[in-house]
Image 1 (cartoon, rainbow, N blue to C red):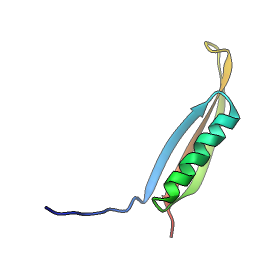
Image 2: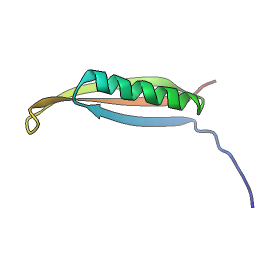
Image 3: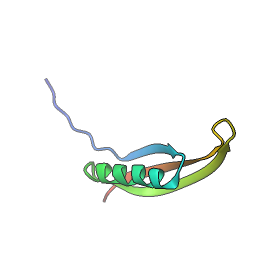
Length: 69
């Protein structure tokens, strides 16, 4: 049996919430989790769109993590 560990070089995660505090908390928690994998934030993109069915604004974020050098 061969045991091999590969290092994660890039990772993209998507988040969504109906308020900014929740979105920020989700991102901060995952930043801490990804530090254990030796990943750092490379870029963040965020958007807001009105959801007429929920009558709320939906906030989304895309966070790209890259291997820490």
